Length: 194
Image (cartoon, rainbow, N blue to C red; front, top):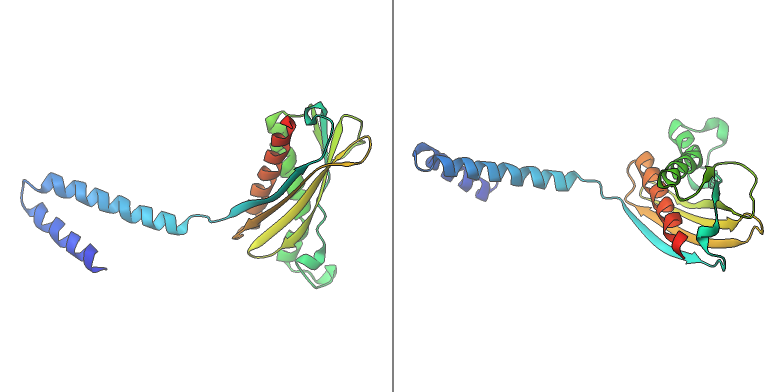
């Protein structure tokens, strides 16, 4: 224990011996407990940070005119997370291979919950009122995951919006994908008013 903790403990014990200092010592002990728990909680908190590096909307048509969204799985090249053939992949490498589907599924869930579009799907034929979300992972690693995404007009297949995001301090891939999908859904929601 540190010198200050020892000093406070000794003073608390002496105050507890006297009847007048009993209420004070209980309050002091309570504050010390809260302080210690706060310090432990802050030290153990998740430190993942999402950084939106770039966000561009190039569409001349108002984004709110789109009524449906098709979400394609983001491209993830196996070279980003392994250099072994598919037959010899470890369980961790197989989990990485499932990330694109998980990301698309979570994006679909978040976008549907906001009710921005009448129809949100992971497959289907685009129409003139459809946006198509495509993207790719540019970096997948222990400490950082980076993605780029594009929204395309369903009728012309022209890019109407672009974003690039990076999540730092990655420890749990599942939680990371959840955070990234929420950020992508936030981007889609934000651009509806541009």
